[in-house]
Structures are given as structure tokens and as C-alpha cells.
Length: 606
Ligand SMILES: Cc1cc2nc3c(=O)[nH]c(=O)nc-3n(C[C@H](O)[C@H](O)[C@H](O)COP(=O)(O)OP(=O)(O)OC[C@H]3O[C@@H](n4cnc5c(N)ncnc54)[C@H](O)[C@@H]3O)c2cc1C
Figure 1 (tube, rainbow, N blue to C red):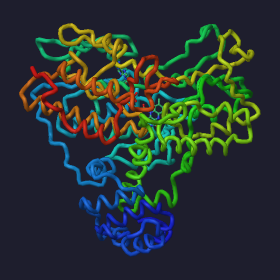
Figure 2: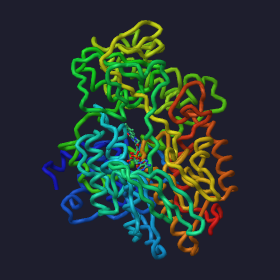
Figure 3: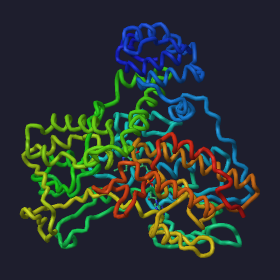
Figure 4: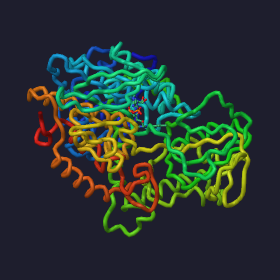
């Protein structure tokens, strides 16, 4: 199976994951009596693994009891039984009942807007369920979405790749534990290729407008060819708007921004022809993209000034920036190891941290944490910060965030602090007064630059914009979304029949860091919605006012319980709005459960 001896494999395995594997493969809840006893786990593994490694025995899905014991071992805690089914599906442990084929009426045409992770997944699933009459359009010249667009130096995921991959296609031979943009782009394109989307995929084609046609009960969609500007109209009986929420670059509102004479690049609009070597560069912003671009630029530029409005919490991850090769790769060939590793990582990055984002109403220190566990976590992150810049009082003061962990997206340290320590790098916290022709003026002084880099993120509240969506009864769905972004389950908008926005407002998760999981949840729900539509013999379905109102009431009641809703600091989940509009106040499990199938009572059929 691999060039490594069994003993080598066992000795390098993660203790908890190995305990889960052994429990699963033995089919015995008592296979690992003591999770702390590594020697005993290794001995059991040496006894159990050989026939699975030589292929003479195949693993079978575990019983519920065995699954439960293995889940507990994998994370070193008691995992609620409610997670069992999600683990079977999301970790790939199985068995999972496949979705039944869709029996679409003759000529039923689906339009998918966007060929990022979500659009490709929706297309693949439609094909798999036998609904081949669909078109995927994307304004970009090739699929990939986020991973096509973002090409700044250092761009990569901060979710482990074995987690940031589809549950049905977990390991495309990831070269690193946290893959870089070119690998991620290759992955999304490879899934699109393997799915056989063929001519259904139309690149360089933008949706400009869509209008609900009451008579024909379909959307009349206006497409624009990005290359030559020509337009055409297509009819779509259902539309899956998989346009992404990190799509519209956000620029800071700085006086004189247009005056700067040199190149000014947003990280999401990178121009590789602009050479930064030996240049004087300003990076404005200190969030997730800055954390990636700054360490990549620092060694090659002459001078780098990072303009910070607020510091971010960063954690270290032992595998970040590390190759995934040799014995570590071989481990994933051990039957069920990959799945249990994914479960364990999914817990650490997902619902294992849900308690850290929920506000304890009696907690008196909301300026620093939201509950006792959050306070302990803050102490861990602060201790890490001290290991990085504890000897530099200036940096320590500037880099210590003044909000609770997870208030903004938690970042995996990409060498940020070490970059800030360099002689050619300065962290500037004095507020920017203006951008000038030559550089940036702050309250503390002025610096001249050759290039400005805006690492200032995205406007996540531009839900359907700039598509002009005219819904039932002439409703201006885009304007409504602009005024008050809301959608039932984060995907169904009022007066927008057969339109599924994924993710729509509050349609993804703020912790858990895995956009692929929420995409899989939404796509499943959309397929089940189409099934409901077909089974009813109806032509359209639209969320009822009552269902939307009740959903919103519940959402607005729950949002304030989550750290991202605190208003003492900014975050992209809220943007310039008065409430969080990007993410759902839910655990991963709630999100998964809520999207298994539609409640027919929530929809009006025609
Ligand atoms: C720098 C960066 C790092 C990230 N890191 C992580 C991470 O570590 N973990 C994680 O879970 N998530 C991460 N994300 C979030 C990431 O966006 C999602 O995980 C995921 O890629 C979103 O996929 P999507 O298909 O929903 O949207 P997108 O990837 O944004 O794709 C949407 C597509 O729709 C197309 N489109 C939009 N409007 C139109 C139109 N009018 N007509 C035609 N086409 C249109 C766009 O061109 C685009 O190709 C990151 C995002 C960024 C920007």
C-alpha cells in the first residue's frame, strides 16, 4: 500500500485519530479502553490494520455505537449523538443515502450563476440527479470563482485542505496542509472537469438582469458576453445564484484615494505585471488577506508600511505552510484515517469552537471575551502573541486586539508577526488622514510610496448586485436586498420564485471556516426544493411572507447572542450595516439540519 512500514505509519499517526480508526475497523466500542494510552492504541493498531492495509478486508460503515465511540476518540471529548448522521456524510464515513434522481418536467431549464465552488457543486449535483438541462454562466474566463480571482502573493486557505474539499472528493493529492491559490483553482477546475459539465459551462458570460415572467412561470435572463459586450436573452425555470459573497472589493473611504500617481492594487484585483521588488509599498488593512500578502511581500520590497485600523486575533497551526508529503501523506491511505482526520479537523475548526462564539449574558468582560471559555482562549492567543513579539513592547501593544476572539474572522498566522519585526517593515497605527499623489499622510506624518496595496476585503452585503432582479408582481428584489438583506434559510427571497441565492444574506457560517460545508448544505436543500416542486406538479415555488417573517424574527433574536454581533468593533459580517448580514447565528449542525429538505408549508406553489 505504501513505501512505509506499518510500524512507521502507526508511530506517526495522530493518537486520537488512530484510536478512532482502530475502533471503527474493529467494530468494537471497547477497542480503545484508554485514549491516553498511546502504546496500547499503537499495539491494537498493529494487530488490526494489516488485513485492511493489504486490501484483503474492506472497512464497513460502523454501527451507531461504534461510530459514537470513534467520534469521541477522534476529538477527545463526548460528541453529542446528534452529530452522527452529519459525520457519516461530511467526514465520508458513510453510509449515506444518496439523493434520489430528480424527475423534471420536459424542458425544465436551470441557470446557475457562477462557477466557483458552489456553482460547480450545484451543476455536478444536478447532473448526478439526472437533470441535465442546465447552463452555468460565469463572467470569468474559467471556473474557480474566489480561487480564480484572488491571485495576490501568498493567497491560500486558512482552513486545512483536507477539510476545505468536497465531502465526495476529499484528497486530490493536496501538496500542502493549507493549499495555495493555484492548487485551489486547479481543484475546483478538476472537479468541474470530472463532473463532465462540458458545453453547459459558459465562461465570460455575465448575468445583467432577470425578470420573472408570470405567464411563462420562468425567469427571462439577460446575458452579456464579457468579451464583445453582445447580449442575449435566455429563459430559466429556476435560477441558482451562486455568485459568492466575497466578490465585490471594498475600498476604504480615504480622502484623495484617486490622487495617488503609482499603481494601487486591491488584493482581489491583483495585477501581476506590477513588480514590487525593491519598491516602497503601503499595505492598507490588516485582515485575512493582509496576513497573507504582507509576509509574502516583506522579503522582496525595499520598504513596507502596514496601515492598521485594528489588530486581529491570530492563532498558530503546526501544519500551516508545511508540505503534505511522505509519511503524513501515507497516513491518508490507511483505510478510514482520512475520514477520521477530517472529522477531527472539522470539529476543531467547526462546532468544537461554537461555545467560543456564544455570549454568556452574565459575562462581565465583553470588551475582551464573551464567556469563560472565550476568556481562556483569549489567554492562549495572547500567550502566542507574546511568543512572537513579547520582547517588542511597541508591537505587543499594537498587535493586541481590543475585542473578543472570533469577533472578526480568526486568522491562522502566516508569519505576520515575524514580518512586522523586519527592519524594512513598519506597523503604522496612526489614522490615515489622506492619500496624496506620492503616498499616505497619517496624523503622525507622511510616507512616500511607489505602490499602494488595498487589503481591505469585500462588501459582503452586495447580495444580488449588480444584477437587476425583478420578481413577482414587478418587485425590485435587488433594491430590497440592498435596503434590507434577508432570505429564508439564507437562500430564498420574497417575491423571487424558483430563485435560490447561495449563499444569500446570513447564508453561511462565521466560525467553522469551511465554505464548502455550507455550500453542500445549500445545494442539497435546493435539489430537494426542486424535487418538491416537481412532485407537486407545480411550476413555481416562492417563500411565503409568513415563513420569511418568522425566520427573520428568529434570526434577529439569535444574532445578538453571537460575538460577531457586538458593536464595539467592526467586522465584515456586519460591514456598514447595523446588524450582521453575512453569517447565520447557528452551529454547523443546526445549519446542516435546517437544510436537509424544505418545509412545504414555508412555500407557496403555483
Ligand atoms: C482570499 C480568500 C480566502 C478565503 N479563504 C477561505 C478559507 O480558508 N476557508 C473557507 O471556507 N473559505 C474561504 N474563503 C471564502 C471563499 O470565497 C469560499 O470558501 C468559496 O470559495 C466561495 O465559493 P462560491 O462559489 O460560493 O463563490 P465564488 O468563489 O465567489 O464564486 C462566485 C462566482 O460567481 C461569478 N459571478 C458573480 N456574479 C456574476 C454575474 N452577474 N454573472 C456571471 N457570473 C457571476 C463570479 O465571477 C465567481 O466566479 C476565502 C475567500 C477569499 C476571498
